[in-house]
Image 1 (cartoon, one colour):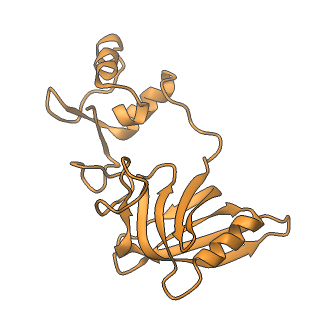
Image 2 (cartoon, helix red, strand yellow):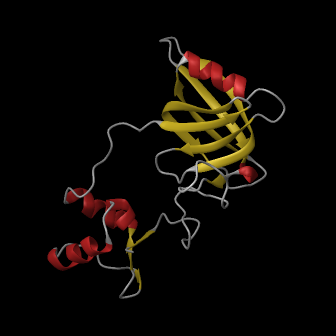
Image 3 (cartoon, helix red, strand yellow):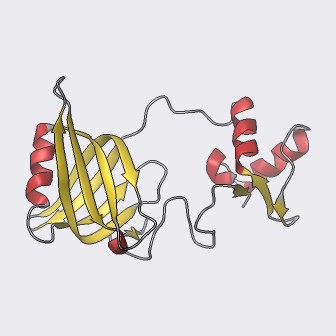
Length: 190
């Protein structure tokens, strides 16, 4: 819950004592209670503790090429992470002609380039040590340019916050250290 509302544990304890309609714990312990994620989100929205974004924030990519690191932006990103390490992860989004040309050059070749850091809303920063490639480039009638990148899911890792890049562990969206791989049903107040 602290991650959803972006507050400390003391704020959650305070809300529990001050608001009679605060959701009851569904698990955990007295010290670290677990709450139903959908009930918590509904309560936070009803009490103006969080907002629903009206627009998806952009994704930021940091690619490492032969000439150094290149930072690119994708608007309206859609990140699809495979559950099977034998499949591929995909990232699509809208970009400029120049950034699309840069992506095409950096990801050309047999193995493509390393994705040192990918920051997408809703997922921990990801890193992919090679084989990132551009698999689709599509221009709409209105002139928008959509690109899709892919990489073997087995290469995915989480980029360390303390480093510019680098793989520190296998990463899954919405999972952190000590959490279950799928934390969609419960939120733990930490």
